[in-house]
Image (cartoon, rainbow, N blue to C red; front, side, top):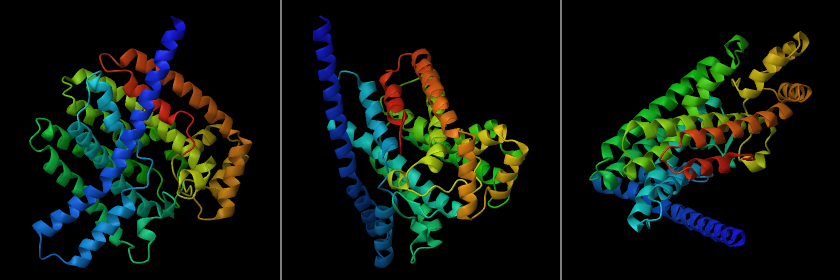
Length: 365
């Protein structure tokens, strides 16, 4: 009996893995048609609009909206499949879930194009940031607005007749607002080249990452799938939010760690948190541990646009053994998350949350 059950579990796991691979391909394949939709909409709605500018939009969308890991976008369909249970998911449902997934990916592209300008970042997803291209520069600010506007075009075209259409719009507006509040807190807590370590704390760091990252990266895709599946009542949404925000905070701590310790060739960007004066997990931990002499090293070298200064900070992190501290934190956080999933999932399939946890646990990019 044990052997039979194990074999059945293995077959189910293999089938689920194959399904996810097929879903990822379908998701990737949908992208060009969405860009075509945007271009066709401009050409039909505004036939007198300049052809060169239309081509700019096409090139900009292809450059900025793809090339990421796509975990957020793919999670909409994965979550919907969990919610559907044993019943087959229709082709129309797959397409709709994937359109919502791309709405999240485009929302992220909107954030990242603007964020790269604010942080003076150099690379994104293994290529120069959009604004760093010679012909682009600060035109990228307007381009970020265009990316966001496309999201609502997609929703209107594909979801206007659905009963949850307004809920989707309100969810996206609220999530965008929360993320922008998080970005504001990040920027005013640590303005470029003005180090005020008194502003840095674990509480401040947690607040920044909760609003800047966790809502749109973790709660949004699951809430979208729940709306699409017809989940009613506040309780399941609140429980999902509690679990997913905790997961999002853990994810951002990982990001802070990878910004310093990750391989740029693997993570797809050059880490800039030290030079950018970020209120990151590593520096907050360091401030709690340093001797007066080590604090002086922090004060003299943190947030300096200088490779040698950055090197000294990394050497200090090594002295403090922050890598070991992070590994211990990772284990504690994973244990806490598994307990929350067990206690708070309620009627929602636990696989929704364990899928997310599996993607981020011990990730290297």
